[in-house]
Length: 372
Image 1 (cartoon, rainbow, N blue to C red):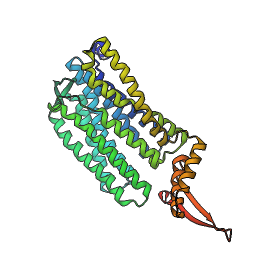
Image 2 (image 1 turned 60 degrees about the vertical axis):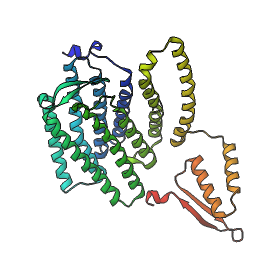
Image 3 (image 1 turned 90 degrees about the horizontal axis):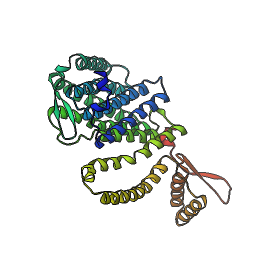
Image 4 (image 1 turned 30 degrees about the vertical axis):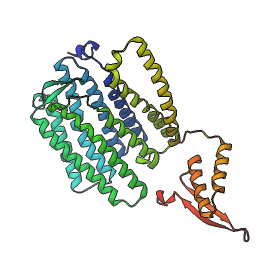
């Protein structure tokens, strides 16, 4: 059995599995990255475990879609669903840790979540026929059929998802700090998008005649979390090396749309003659260069890695400031330009009185976001 599981001859890997496979490693990178930042934090640990299980799910989906034999489909779907059912307990746990809820009814419900997830996981592993039975064959690949406890699990998953989203939304409404509000808003959005990963379970009900884009929610989820870490110091992550690592990961996301386009056009590309295929490759190469040079500078700027010519910057700043007739407008433009080119979060502007020589505070920007 194990020899066949690990044999390349047991699988038929197609180009459309590449985006899902790449997306899984983005989730793995995020899990390791957050965990290493603060290993003792419950918030970091639960988020890392959740992201790691998303990696297991996406990787399992890749092998499920590529399996030639029905028993191998069931084997990999057992792994996928084991991670899937356990992850809902981690999801709700992260929601409570993020919202700083440590007592009351939500904590009691968390214990029930762990008990329910463990029970479903035991059924998937040891009584698989009550959860998955039979195999559907789609154009993009196979998927196991849902059985009785799969239906019950879907109700449980929906209830936990709603509870998690309400918990994060409640934290958003309660907190008065600007930074925490922004963190809650983007976490709500990130996990809301990720919940669309659950729609992949509909293929267990015969719904899924087209390729399930399981990579999209995971990729968008990682992108939103990375943005929140960089912009709003989510989970108190803020160092130069972390920004560098996230910059590398986000830069790699540039290749995701290219992979999607490749898998969509693959059947057509295979039918072309060598000359036509060569022409398409050359055209695509120059198209990608244009796309990369348009998008990469924006990523560099967001992660504060874009290089500027100091003389050009000085000329632009002086030109824009001098074009303002009012002092208030000049100060606003100056602050905006300094923030753009120097990546300054906090700016304080003092104006010197020509007669007395004393300085007066004209404006301050950014300090209210830190609660100072």
